[in-house]
Length: 239
Image (cartoon, rainbow, N blue to C red; front, top):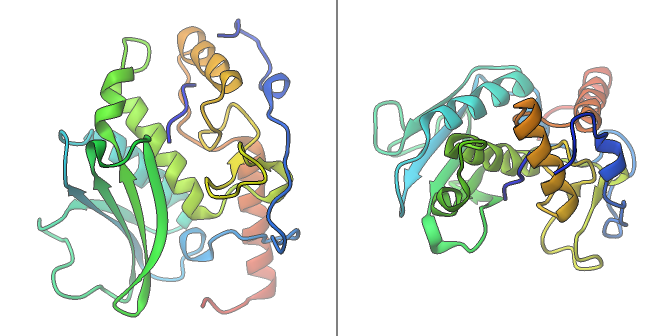
């Protein structure tokens, strides 16, 4: 799901925050919350994004490059992307030293901008992101190129896989329906939803400041660092 990143220059993101809503019963309320250690610590040698084009037009390579850089920085190890069936892509088996994220470009097979989830494959957990790149093309403009729209969707869905946001700065748009997943209350975060507030902030951000939502907000970044500090101190084995 993508967020545009109209308020005047200098408009504070804090003034457009969404209201925090309760998380489902049993949601962890303490560090490291439900953040994903596999994607945030160097539990293996690399992260590989495997790109599959099932429907629609070709992806934006620069958007994938930006996602790879973000994943490598937060995952503290090399990351790369390859085309499914191309050089370097997994063929018959998955490398045990690699974390896999499969990105499927599916066009209008899904009604929204993107989806993300984890599933078991060959006895291990892999991650999936589905992208409706055809919908991006309808929203592109000189202010917000298609590459930026696609990048924001990728970063948004990857944030879900990271386990963001923690309960203290997340909300459910249709609370108490939790089916759509949690989103960040801050309009300057790519993990927010395209509500009127975030759209107004986003248009101003791109039109006046030429800033795009290519990284998580300060509150989400602090949560990532707090989780990493917890794991380093406690030394819990990765499961």
